[in-house]
Length: 319
Length: 319
Image (cartoon, rainbow over all chains, first blue to last red):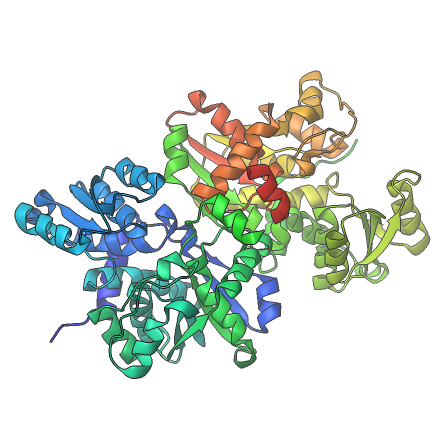
């Protein structure tokens, strides 16, 4: 029986990341309020270090390493934000980091990871298994593997974003959080249950990648093929064991939105709120807008998960 | 002899706008710090209501109306952010607003001004004089004219952005502020001289529109033709009487940057800091970057004035 992280772990993570992670602003928009008929509070994790909430969980996990772990180092496999979050956190804490990335990962991401001081090990994504490579590096070199979402310290770290939101706004009626592997959603749920017990908590996925919704509604983790969606941060194929147990216990429902809705919200954020949000970061607000009939007069939290979209793609999507 | 506004006026304005204007966040960027070799504090007025600092001065000026002025209403002439700032502030304060705009003003701006409840009076910019129309409306209807920058209450209101910055960061070594008509720069200078006396204050203009630099260095207000620059918020032809006197007294120098530098910083803000900044809003940071050799190890403030650029233009500039 696995021991799930609790709100106390979120609070401890908040103390560990203080002064290292940005305390991101809670943004308001008169237009958003009018369009939804509600008060909307946006937690802007696109303004977090590295442009996404992932830094919180990575830094928290690495902060808990003991002396032997720190010396041997950390290994992570990721082609996205988790890799950079681990590499940056490791550099700040003086821990060697090895990141397993596909050979054909975007050069900019490889460069960014190396720029943070991470050692990059590449693999062929068609013939090799990144998890096996990660495990092998961990076993042979004594490195500690930190997975992208299914880890108590990662979940507790991600929960600090919602904790900061509630600390600033007080209790809310509803909270909308994007859902990929479930690290952010399960951490947010821990914070919400403690700080705003009456708050309805919604996870939001892209329509094409609704494994979380299927899992939530069926009561067992459902695996799907890598979904086709512009929300690249939510292209995970299944929830984790920890994240699923917390989501099943604490989340009210899992909703889905279309890619077209995500593009509409990217445009809204850029034109009305002057912020760059990646498609995955638009999931929460897109679902809140779709539910606006039920949110009249309510106080609504939305977590904007990140802003890592290159400008060429951003402009192509908005064109 | 005109009586210049003081820091006490800025502090009073801060009390008036509290709860009405957003207290915008001060953003940090590790990349900006590394590239400049300095600690850079960005006051993000692109995240202000209506997307620009202009709301501060307009709301402050209208808050000071007496009962007769409130009843008769306000008139302003502007094709840009000042019009919307006056219209929105007037609506919030229950004051009728008339905005004089050119017949060929962008439909979106006219609609936005009307959306805030403002009455729009149009004129032909080739045959009619907007100042004369504004004065006539003021005289005939008893309306109070609020000019876009050369007014003590407007200047004091704009100074609240820098006041909030210093309240959060403590004293800084240098402050970079964009310069059009001088409302933001002169207000910022009042705040800086009171809260951070040793801070060097720089106004920054587009190269093509360096009337402020010419004025500052010659000691008299220089008029120029409407300059050709992408920094549309700094296309003013001359400083005001109040703003010039404060700038001459309190500002250390006026610098210029090229349009190409502004585009580079728009890209930096979007890709690294995940915020949309209009060309004028990039003036301060572009100048700070150009001066980086002299800023090593320093604590540097940059005011980002606004984010009102439509996405089509934004993407065209970044392409």
